[in-house]
Image (tube, rainbow, N blue to C red):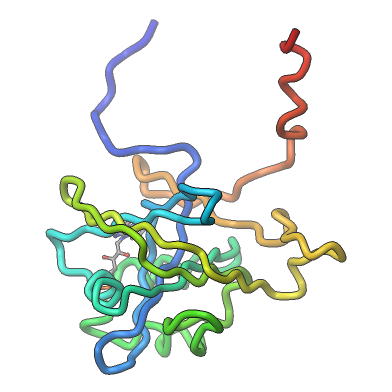
Length: 192
Ligand SMILES: Cc1cc2nc3c(=O)[nH]c(=O)nc-3n(C[C@H](O)[C@H](O)[C@H](O)COP(=O)(O)O)c2cc1C
């Protein structure tokens, strides 16, 4: 039997990722986002959504600069990721507080946070208002990854990134788990 549960924005799995941008004074902002997903192959693009009714400094900076980075943290960085999501850049230099360093990204004028092992460099290509949130689509113009998470063919090794999954229902962080099958192959047995 099915039951109705509280109507809530949800997605499984949802990530906890970190968006970063420079403010009007060139100071690096960063905030944690669960509303984030890939949305185009050609060009490669991601979509993030930031609450526009509450005042998020990172949103202001991204809208002004039209460029941002999106970083994938590992489960060992969960406290830092959480902090970036519970404090505002209006009150603190958050990256300095957690002893994280940053530098200008290669292809966009946005801060890349060195401690995160994979970062996307994004240029804003589309903005739309959806309910409480501003949805920002960013074209990925460059990807930077630590050597330690890249194999000999130049591919990022998912298990080494060990990204954080987030559950907005219980406000909990999870690790993602084991590899279970080959995509585009596991379903072949049902194909005639
Ligand atoms: C796990 C987690 C996920 C979050 N996801 C989002 C999100 O997708 N969109 C959003 O607007 N805020 C989200 N937040 C809240 C912002 O990260 C938070 O308000 C942050 O303090 C904003 O910082 P800023 O003012 O420096 O930009 C999330 C917070 C946490 C802890």
